[in-house]
Image (cartoon, rainbow, N blue to C red):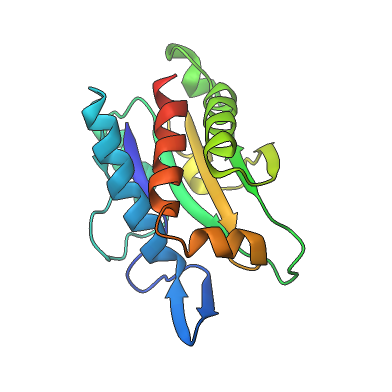
Length: 181
């Protein structure tokens, strides 16, 4: 299982000002991914990271790396934001593709399992799973692949949880449970 900590390096992803400090999505994604790989390995899953430091990985390099490694699953870890404070919750993007026919599950099935487990752990609104063929990491990977959006920086309830000491653990545990199931 290849875990991709979304963004990184010169690509910070979303950012938020909180208590006078700026926080970047890339840092949340990396912390969650490191914990997720640790939990997966503890469960006996052969798991690795696409990046394990704050480095830039080009968008089209991400699926190419996964394909070159012949990963069985690709999971991209992200968090969300909006121009409105209203949207909140967890969502998972997927794209079923013909190259998945040799695997025991589809991207949609993986998305459903990860979504169920993550919503149960985080207790945030369930925005569901959404097919999204436009994302390169979903349409250019050969294996089942998902993009997980844990919570919204722009939503006060989500942000409160994101800034808690337990968020990383809850997010990682939820995704790990979905992958293992």
